[in-house]
Image (cartoon, rainbow, N blue to C red; front, side, top):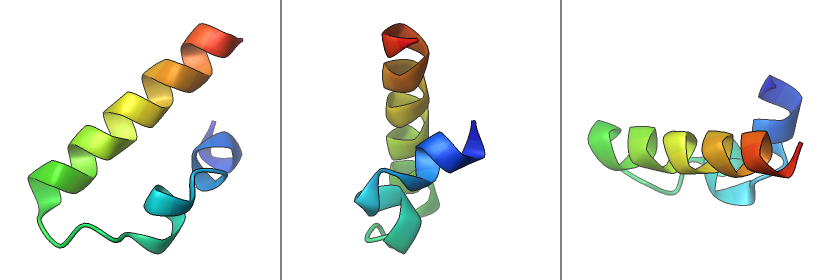
Length: 37
C-alpha cells in the first residue's frame, strides 16, 4: 500500500505544509488506489 501511495507525486514530495491537508491527500490517494484494485 505504501509503495502505491508513493506513486502519487504530491504525497511523495509532500507539497502541503499543513498536516490536515496532507492527511486529506493521503486519504484521497488511498481511496483511489483501493477503488482501482
